[in-house]
Length: 198
Image (cartoon, rainbow, N blue to C red; front, top):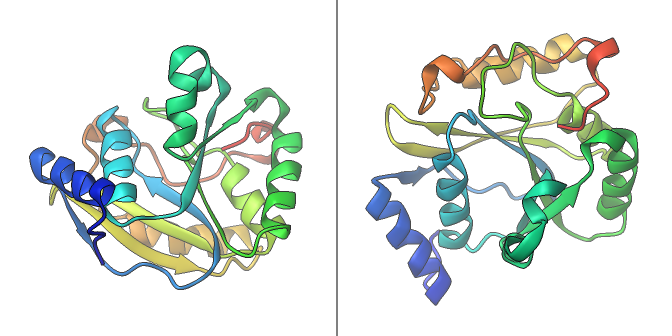
């Protein structure tokens, strides 16, 4: 599963230094929306990127445009980042759906929590995007208790929010965040509050 390319070896070294391991199998689907939860610490990003390198994953991830400004911008893009303007959520979803439709294979990661701080509800962008692009949802987790990035499960969304979220909640029910006090409930925002991209 692990890559023996130089960057892959470096990713494995980073995970070893941080004391984290990777568990599970990679999905076989060519197109996916990925959520990696919980997101409560800056270390989450380092672990995720090290795993991306270690497994030689051709996966992209969405980040707020502010992360890509200045000298760090090219580095963020090299690491697979795609800047988005969160104030234009529907435009972002439209553009990403077109990307899925025009690609033979495309894995895209989104943080449904949208912040490292405690939040009562997840943003809905990941859910709406997967439904509109007609691709499965890949749920992976960062379990601090076991210091393990679990490659998790792939869910074919039904469009029935209650049913889909019950399956997602079940998967994340035993996961311990790096900062547990910042890990809020696994539930979506109400429709009237769901204008942000996740």
